[in-house]
Length: 323
Image (cartoon, rainbow, N blue to C red; front, side, top):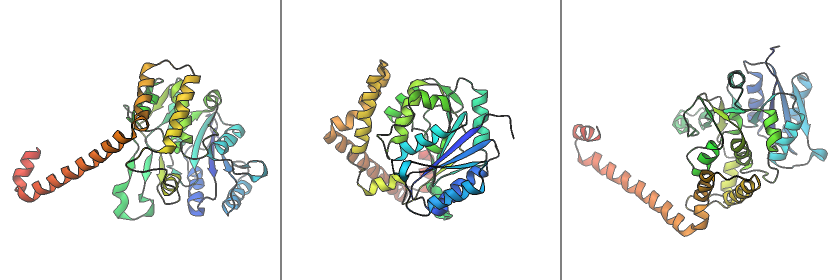
């Protein structure tokens, strides 16, 4: 066993797809870094995923523990994560959702970074939005990395990342892409249990990035599986998202952000200006819809012009014009 600090890996699940769930668990067992424990937190499952988790806990009692809420309740993603964190023994916390995977060097690489960067309280890289898990070669091109918004392999002081998140210039970390010191989670109060599903991760990362330095790395060690039963796709089916309208769930989140920043006594003018920018679509919904429509129309017109140019201009001349 390595002398490096113990890592607590936490997988929360609710009626997980069996194949995906087992792949997530096996990706932890496949880590090149071995000094970890795995906590499987059941958020009230009513299908076979409970038995899967219990089987791993019974088969590997020295590595895996099964947790559930009292009375096998369903209390939401934030409460499930907090239950795992409260029971964790590790100095570092790593999160993995039940339908995603880690690459084998995830823990080895990120533990090394936190040990080499004592000022950093969390590390994350660019999560890959993973469509190609199906094995269909036609969808490989759909895979894309989440935007970091900063120079990678950089220690970013607070509240820079929070400002970039609000401005839409960077995306919050993928939950499965982080490794974080456990004491930081305690200091910021853990996950916000008022967020049971959507935005629960963003609320947590906003709190962390407001308070502590974070190391943003160039590595990408996790794969965020895109499929029809994922949380974001479920939200779309429930019409929480619309391409031309502000997102009501996002407004609820922003209302929470405003309250939290005020309670924390934040005076930073850049943070508040970025918050006003994020709130603008809800203050001016008609202008927002018009601007989104104009952007779509502009892209379509540009596409038509490019298509016409390719058809009307000889290829050699078009190549020179582009150059």
